Amino acid sequence: MAVPFSNTKLRVPQGFQTLLEMLSREVLRDQPKNVYEFAADYLDGLVARRVQGQDRIFGLCMHQNPGFKK
Image (cartoon, rainbow, N blue to C red; front, side, top):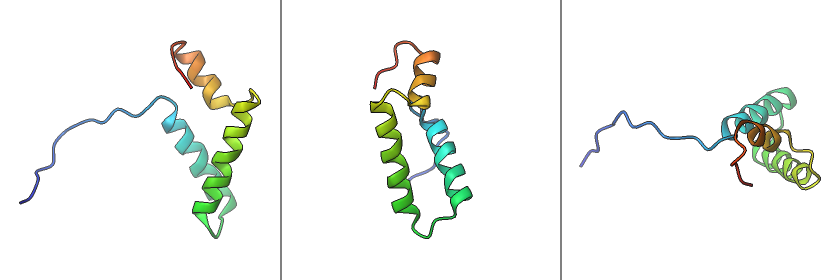
């Protein structure tokens, strides 16, 4: 049985679009042979920066929405 498509709009978590844009930019800039490994390393680096208090995505989300939680 086929399921018809709908006009449902999905809400993207705050900061997710920015995260994907930044990751995409770095993938295009670096042209890694293994995109999955590159993405994992990139995201690990972002987590490390957040722990150190240097995460600009989290800072941007906090600035735009003071109720935003980690």
